[in-house]
Length: 240
Image: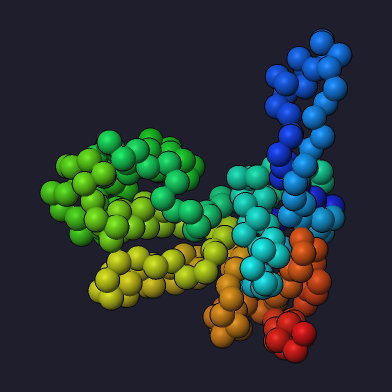
């Protein structure tokens, strides 16, 4: 399950103080620099997603869709409100986060595996399967900084999709390499979707949303504009 209760998230702007600066200003009795340019990305969101649901999230650029996913998976702690998630969770966005460019492909499999929540034992058990999926061969012995963009995406995708989670958060379709690898990636994603108890999918493609989701949440300016049956919400969004 995923339950968000009265979630708000504000990013501080220019003039925002760190904890150290706040303490220093108290000791010195200095005036606080006004916080200028803060951005409230989410405003009082209540979302409850249960076992078996496939939920699409739609909205214009900047509406707060990806931020919502990042709150769900714990990347962003909310400014206020409560987040409850039960089950193993996988976030298929920003899949290149945590890679060390000076380290080899093999070493980065371990690093990224730990970041997505695998234990060292689980990583050891899956390392060869991940390596085989990348089709990078001896290139895994080299530092990642020597990889082409396509090679890097292959490695990042293979590690990030090496688990079958209970909760799958997906932001758009993951582009991964040439057509041959794209076909493999699509089959792997489909396997993850079928296994997951919960799917939350962000996309600008209404066809993709309708093909995969029975419920849709429409986000507008950080708030839930509409939440309901997929086609009804999509049609309202398109008409707006």
